[in-house]
Length: 277
Image (cartoon, rainbow, N blue to C red; front, side, top):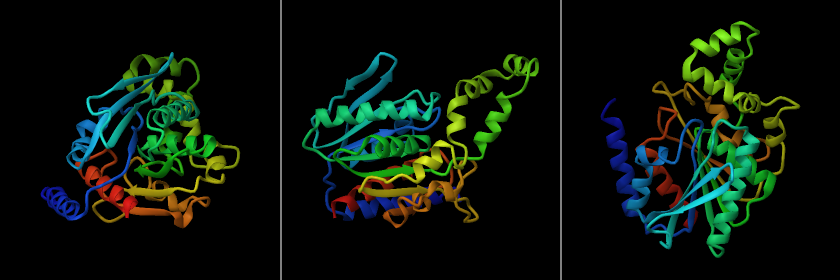
């Protein structure tokens, strides 16, 4: 099994080389929970994109004082990658606000160009919420990778950990370490990403009209073929299971682990090519 990712990467690379040059405009990347702009770098995704002409154009940082733009060397390249840094512990709505600001920045900076949004894990859900709520100007596709579109039952477990009464909550706070502090800071977010039921944010989102754009769901699979990963179920990762999207979403089964990998870069290259065909 250890050699399988290398073989698959080689096959994807061969396929990408047989395709004509990718021609699109701006790829806006959104990381997941407790991730960062470096998630796309450490995994090798951005290196693969760069190899096929998608060059890093800017890093946008969602800071308390507003959006901060850090231009990169290739900000005027034909195919551009803009990477958004979020505080992934704040509420889903708060992160969606930052995404909308980033989308406006991209539209202002590159007014004549189309935008493809790619979000990993929670980042895909953040992007979808913002696009549904605030519109999708110049966006032609949303690609999500292992995203919890139907929530995750782990959110209930996280809430259970931080909802203990005094003095047990103080003992957990003292002995629980950084993981417990992360859960405490993310309490509002955890409430928002429980599986959708009436009255919850995801129920509202999944029943709203969605923008008329292309949708791609990259869904993880375990080694025994069961869809999903230990963090998010396969059903939740697939936007085809959202009534407002349904058959408008293309499902791509790729990868075994929840985190980003080099193979996601090749998958993105092939999706980008499909968008130009």
